[in-house]
Amino acid sequence: MKRSAAEIVTEYGPFPGVEAVHGVTYDGTHVWFASGDKLNAVDPADGKIARSIDVAAHAGTAFDGRHLFQIAEDRIQKIDAASGKVLGTIPAPGGGGDSGLAWAEGSLWVGQYRERKIHQIDPETGKILRTIESKRFVTGVTWVDGELWHGTWEGEDSDIRRIDPETGKVLEQLDMPAGTMVSGLESDGGDRFYCGGGDRGKVRAVRRPRHG
Amino acid sequence: MESLITAAARALEAGDPLGALNRVALRNDAPSLALRGIAMAQLGDLAKAKTLLRSAARAFGPREAVARARCLVAEAEIALVSRDLNWPVKTLAAARATLEKHGDLVNAAHAGHIEARRLLLVGRLDEAERTLAEVRPTPLPPASQVVRELVVAGIAIRRLRTKDARAALSRAADAARLASIPALLAEVDSANLILVTPAARLIARGSEHPLLLGEIERLATSTALVVDTFHHVVRRQGVAVSLGTRPVLFALARLLAQAWPADVSRETLISGAFQARHADESHRARLRVEIGRLRTQLEPLADISATQQGFVLAPRKTRDVLVLARPDEEKHAAVLAFLADGEPWSSSALALALRISPRTVQRALEDLARSGKVQSFGHGRARRWMTPPVPGFPTGLLLPTPLLKT
View 1 (tube, rainbow over the protein chains, first blue to last red):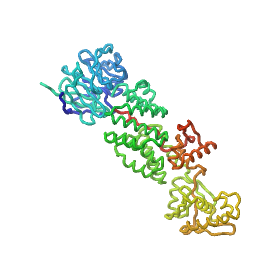
View 2 (cartoon, each protein chain N blue to C red):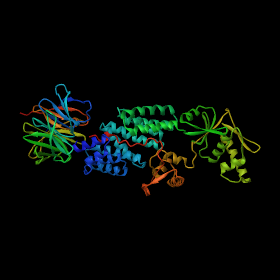
View 3 (cartoon, rainbow over the protein chains, first blue to last red):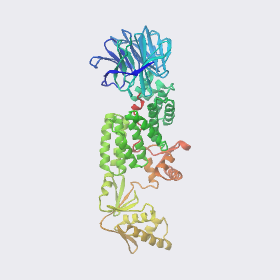
View 4 (cartoon, rainbow over the protein chains, first blue to last red):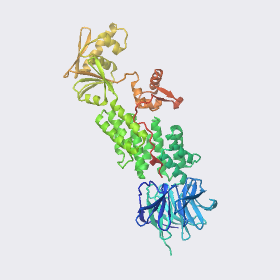
């Protein structure tokens, strides 16, 4: 297992009226984050909120190319990214104990915080297809280049780790600086992760290590 | 943090404890227990709240020291408001240190304020002041500022520093408006009442009138000879004779002062100081002895001369004699003074606060209950005593929302 300090590239926020960041995703242009009763789109170039959707947003956020998926209470809402309209909901696999959310390979991947699990579910029905065990509380999930990464937050410590999707084994770990929490994780498809900063109300960009 | 916990915490923050309970009522993981505990506290079920918060503190893992410390702080606040003064102060101090160490300064300040409120309540003003001074002056949320200023005002009032009290209360009012929490505004209002409600009676030359706190304070600079029934002292400016351990001498001094410049008959002095119905020869002999002792004690301040029918006070270096008395002289005034905060007290907490035996407190409470001045509820060790609600200080349960934060 490779272990190193996370390299924070940029910090966005705090944003006016935003107390905490509960989930993060990226649509190719904007970084979206969940702030309780809103989804906000931040322009990563200037760090300003370009657009907001009024929708319950208590935990993980994901994007499938057209729709935003957002955890609220014990369900996952499917939201049309263009209109902001909620198109439907499915039950969340953790029954409200859900934390992170990611879209990959036609499935939704949901972190279940205190159970230390990641579920792969059917985005149409919410049916659990399989479950990966982690060693830590899961706060964010993302897929990039076939790698499964998730954020952890347990007690006072947070890190970003790559795990083997078959066995749950930790392959690589990026330790966040003390007092820096990860609530929500998303890759930009390149060399950046976007991380929610919990109740500090920030979004951070962290460098993704490239191997080759 | 996870979804339903976030939703429930937001509901609590928005003042909707039932909405919070709806979301976590059936869950028994640590954060849910903590949220349920705080919701129950806000709904007024302090016993249930205490149990839930205690379970939550146990359920948080060893790596979740901050979350656990927050539960302990919330439990300490509930203990304070329930007047459970035996709650372990060391636990609170440890929780406060943990929060400080991990940079949770807002909740650490809250813990410090709870400590100071407890000290104020049991009359340890110096320690309360020291504790407040230790609280790191981080930018505090308005609600915490209100609490802080209320404690400052409470200390100032107990110390008869009206100007300081007024300034603190005005800062408290500003912060309460910023916080826009109705309960806090009400608490500041009722604290203000203390400044405009008579706190004592002044008896001089046979007549009396009520005194406000500020007027009592001004007495300190008066040149009169003052017989102070609050502190059981006779004083004139910087010179004070304490008669706290000599109740008979104090009673005589007070009778003489109240009548001044007239004299007081032997019969009145004997019945007033010895609680004797008929004055016989042995009482007259004892009166002579006690007057002799009082004369010795008061030597620097006054002389006592015999008259045809009794004795008269002759103050030195002043032409004024005043008696400062409680506004309402009750047999159990001290017990009532504590109950006047409008909160339920256990008799053991009262005994601790008054530093007298639990049995004595019990007897006083039963006495007061018979005359309808106090009421009790609960049984056995859970029994609590209170007066009908009157301005109290500081009594509120705050459980600030930062306690819920991740």
